[in-house]
Image: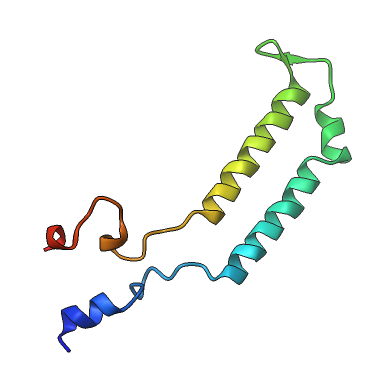
Length: 97
C-alpha cells in the first residue's frame, strides 16, 4: 500500500481528532451548569435595575445576551468538522491533486 492510499484510508489526520461523544457530553453538561449559574438569582438581581441601555432595560439585554451566547457555544460544541479535505462539500477527489 502506498503512503497516499494509507493516508486516504485513515478517517482523521493525527492533528485533527474530533472530540469523542463523551467529551461532547461533558462540554454540554458544563454549559448547562454555567447557564444555570448565569441565569439564576444572584446574578439576575445584579442586573434587575431600572436603568436603561439604548432604551432597553439592562435585565432584558443581559438575559437575551446570555441566552444567545449559550446557543452559540452549544452550536460550536455540536458542530461536525470535516474529517478530510475530500469530506468537505463541493470538493471532489479529482480536484484535490
